[in-house]
Image 1 (cartoon, rainbow, N blue to C red):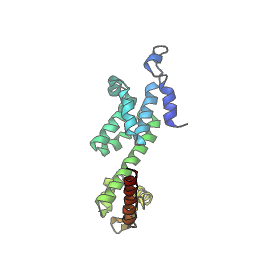
Image 2 (cartoon, rainbow, N blue to C red; image 1 turned 60 degrees about the horizontal axis):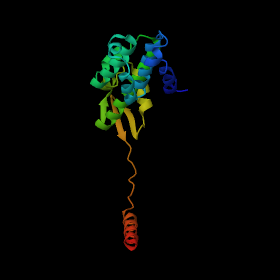
Image 3 (cartoon, rainbow, N blue to C red; image 1 turned 135 degrees about the vertical axis):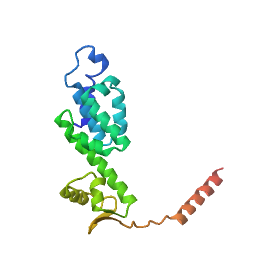
Length: 193
């Protein structure tokens, strides 16, 4: 079972009509908040916004379980990645920690892809701040994990991290064959008409 299927099943019980029959679950907003965290962590932003629209505004601002994913998404949109890191310490439930870490990893992945395109190299000191990694061992593991992703080799030389782009084989467009095929189609159409 995936998180989407399980959440879909549970949301049946959180529907307005069903909630008139039985009282709200004590864990309803905990589960909804975790589902929102899952959507953020796995970059399912459209689904996140669909789900957040179904939650009353009052709960978005006052309920701690909903407020965490809402504020994380807001910090993400603003580009305030340090606020996301600081919020890792202030989660309302231990299960949130997993999704916050996944969310931070997803952000680092996107920053890494942008850095590869924007820079030929970076000082290692700057990479700590850019990738929001404090410990040297974690940075080395991050560099190893991102090496050769999307055709870019990461090389540490001295005090710099170099992004060496692999040369892609130039593929030839069979233009002459395409022109001949189009001319044959045009000739056939002309005969039919």
